[in-house]
Amino acid sequence: MRHDRSAAMLTWVFALVALAPAFPDSVVNSRHNLSVGGPGAVKATAESQVCIFCHTPHDSSGEAPLWNRYASASTYVTYMSSTVLASPGQPSGASKLCLSCHDGTVALGMVRSRASEIPLFGSGTMPAGSSRLGADLSDDHPVSFAFDQALSAQKGELVNPSLLTGAVKLDRAGNLQCTSCHDPHDNRYGKFLVVQNSSSALCTACHTPTGWTGSIHAASTATWNGAAPDPWPHTQETTVAGNGCENCHQPHGAGSPQRLLDFTPLEANCLSCHNGHVATRDVAGDFSKASVHPIAATDVHDPKEDTVNPPRHVECVDCHNTHKATTASASPPNAPGSLLGVRGVSSAGSPLAQISFEYELCFRCHADSLNRGAATVNRQFPQTNTRLEFSPTSRSYHPILAAGRNPDVPSLVSPYTTSSIMSCTDCHNSNSSPAAGGSGPNGPHGSFYRPILERQLVIAEGSSESLASYALCYKCHSRTSIRGDASFGEHSKHLGLRASCMTCHDPHGVETAPQLINFNRQYVTPSSSGRLEFVDSGRFRGSCYLTCHGEDHDPLSY
Image: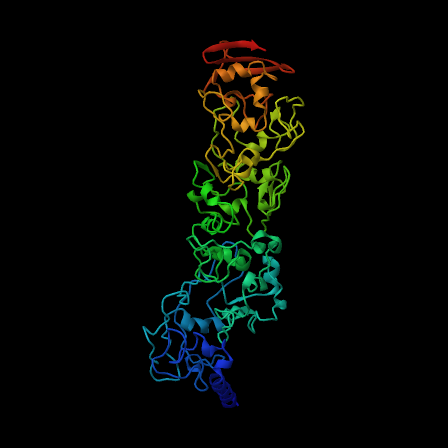
């Protein structure tokens, strides 16, 4: 009976060879045809049989389908990451058979049905390149693991394996193998894939990332402009939507093994497109400016890291979820589409799996984190926790979490009112962004002005007052009103003395002082009586106890 089946198989193969032109995508016309008539560069010097390199009707290894090859003796390094829940073991089943060629250790012509190795052009083993996987499979999609309902339920974002009844299939034991994605006899879709992978149809047969179908990366028709480097060196697709998952991931030979990312360092996976060569805005250029979020300084982001106190770092994916991001805009304080699906910290200090408001993302690193960094200015009332600075319980604050306390701010320019709510990115933004009058990207990626300010704000004293020097303040506050002393009778005098807005005011907020008064201790010291204080005496009235520019105020009232 066994020989009858073998004879039938060989009869079919001979018929296939005879009719090869009618089956242009069959194994005969693919690189898996290692016979002397094969179309690839790797082929035999004289052997004319096609199937012999994998199959034999007699004396096979005992493994289906009538396997003719010797198994590799390699012990493999399998895929591993902090987020993998499957248990990939040593390759088994069909995957082990594939690796008898593709790990590059067994000669391609070394088959059981021949007493000697079939000679091939070249070295005889799989030549170096993307098809030679080697024994280190840590940069390849995991195989030989049970893809069952328990894994699907535990992992989430995976299909129920009972639905894998189409081209993508598990083996008889319910394991995912190389043959779940590849059909070694049919190359109609290229790379011997079982389905055409445009828009990652093969990937999404198993993977169902939440939000992916509505994301910009799944929908964008943007193309590469041809300027080096190629963002998609391993695909034939020409648009972002066409590349789908492979904008960032590759299933074999990944540049960054954990999560099979295309490139290392991590930010290269984003900036390969967001450099003006695919995406319209050049985000990469902003990271070369004087003040940046330092993505290039570290490479330690991990999806399992502590939300509030991970190792100190910042990467693109700390602020952007590439599976969920959209181009939707939002009114403050709501998070725009570019920030959908990222973690943060609430105004109460609680970790959040997904933010709703932009400031919740900023609070992740700039609030309760023990490594949140030093203050930019040496203040009278030091505070580097921005969540507390902006707290509506503070005496004064810029309106990030709630409308401001002061109902009378005559310097505000339209459309701002005392009921307005702001976003952190109203101040911390690219200096070349549309909001700043430029054509660059929005967002606090980088700026010419420290600390990542959209416009110039001179902190040090000694500069002449000008629209440019305090452009950030004058974005919302009328220069005419400020210089006209509409709310404080000494504004024009102090500006004339080349004092900075930042000498007296702390733009985030002050827990214990009104009018954002929080003196810069570099320039302001206690008065002759030892007091350093601003006393609010009512509408547009107050007294200062301090020494500044050599003048003792003990007090000076207005």
